[in-house]
Each structure stands twice: as structure tokens, then as C-alpha cells.
Length: 272
Image (cartoon, rainbow, N blue to C red; front, top):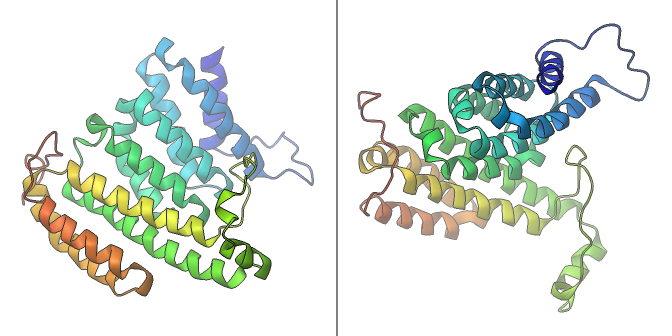
């Protein structure tokens, strides 16, 4: 029964919604796809009782969903993050198209934390990323660099759009002691991104850069250093990032000579 349920959802994600389904005026196709993805998160729990093909078909459908509706991007990334630990072999099989789709969708500003969360999960899944080529690793770094630039744009926008009373509240000495309600709104809804949240995005982005860099072996670090340092120099030219970028430039320069443990090795896969 679970397998049949999964196949129906995967078919609807990868193909068109059947014409005999009436959508109505208030429900769009993106709403259906969003519901399908959220149901797959529950289906994922049954993978230990099913053959490997079950997990492969599930990830394949999610990869197809990455290129569809904007509303499904964040919940798909959430499932992929969990899948790094639950079904790592299936993630490894489809990792290349996943990275390609993410690179095309990084203009979605609300998805920044979800993308970073997925990359941090990948970093903690050495078996998933062990076969990545230099070009694929470079794609990961390129995406993170772009996310940092996007967070700067978000920060500027938040400063322009923040209400005056919100700015005054942030300056109040008691502001840091205020109690905040837990946000229970669904991830498919847009939300106000304040300046403090954009700074958190930047922190997480630099953290993802350093975590991935430490996963590389010595030869891979040397291969990627020109690309990494070129992008760090570009970031250092941005006023609000110059100190962070300078610090990480020094960090990367020193870390490439450190001891290597469980690093990603791509020497046998490409000619460098």
C-alpha cells in the first residue's frame, strides 16, 4: 500500500497532474505539488522495509520537483537534507543533478537557509560526497559564494524596508531580552527577512565554506585554492563583508597545510 501511494505521488511530481482532477479557483497546481512533497516526507520513513529502488524512485521524483514550482523548493530541500542520513546511497546517485538544479534556483532568496542546511548535511555525509569530481566540488563552492552575495542584497533590502518602530526597538537595550513566539507558519509562505537574519545567513554561508574546505584532501585544496581565493577577494571588496572575507582568506591559506583526515579524494577520478 505504501509503495502504491509513493508511486502515485512520484508520478504526479514527475508528470502532469491528471486532467480529470478539478483544481478550482483557490487551489493551483503548485499547491498540489507542495502537498505531494510533504506526503513524501512521511513515506520516507518506510524505506527500511522496501528495496533500494523504493528510495531511488523517491529521490528521482524530488529531483524532478526541484525544477518545477517555487513553492516546492524549500520542502524538497528539507527532505533531501534528511535523506542524506536516511538513504545516502540514493542521494549519492542523484547528487550531480541535484547540485545542477540548486545552482539554477539560488535566486530564490527565501531558500538560502534550506540550501545551506542541505550542504552542511552533505558535509557530514562523507560516503555521499566521496565520489564528487573537482568540478562538482567547485559547483558547491560557487553556490555558497552566490548565497553570500544574495544575503548582502537581502541585508540592503531589509534596511530599506524595515519599519521605523522596528529599528527603534532593535536599538533598545531591553530588545535582546524580549520573548519571541515560535514561528509555526509553513515553509511555503514568504516571510519578512530582517537584518539580523541576513547576518545569520552570512555566518552559516561562511561556516559551510569552511566545513567543506576541511573535508578536502591536500591535493584537492591546492586545485581549488585559486578559485576560492578569487571569490574571497571579490567578497572582501564588499564593505559589510571585508573583515569576514579577510579573516577567512587567512584561514583557508593556513588550513590547506593542516593534517588530513577523511578528506574527499578525487585524484583517481580526474586528471589534474
